[in-house]
Image (cartoon, rainbow, N blue to C red; front, side):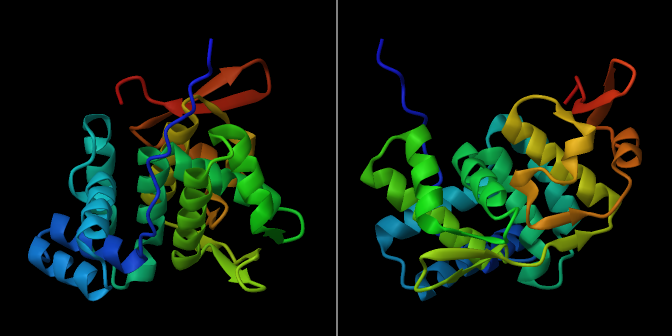
Length: 241
């Protein structure tokens, strides 16, 4: 039997201020025409414009059925963001939940930069090719995700774009935001995660979850804490979510 190659899905560079504009539309503070004008001002042709709008729909405007509630709660948390930079946690969480490819690039980048703070782009490409196949489309999509993550403030690209340097993590203190991002990571992973590893999970590398996480989980309607054995605790999505 021939193994099926996982779908890529996320293959466009998405600027953070586009996500912020789409969030404004969703919150009733802007119009689709204004969002389209922003995209056209960036020089996107008709095909690129359509593909970018598709990504923004999935992230913000028209999420798939199983993410409608999750994205809706995220919109409620971030609709009052003052600057595009303040939207970064929302954009990251939405991308993790909606696009496993984005999450896998984030996971590899987080792991590879966890020790020395940097890694080569070639290392990320190699890891992604092992999962998605050594194809030109894989290289283009990985490049688009890395460019997106750099634009969202997670990494800096140096040495003519050949290396990635992890930027200082953004501290998050709002309990609801921390819980929502944990939920995003769980949706990406597709399984429960050990409570002890949440603070350092690779897919959330741009953020410091600045709350006692057991307390956050206990106070979230979307999350639940499970005990396995005398000392192991796992976090999972609540059964009703």
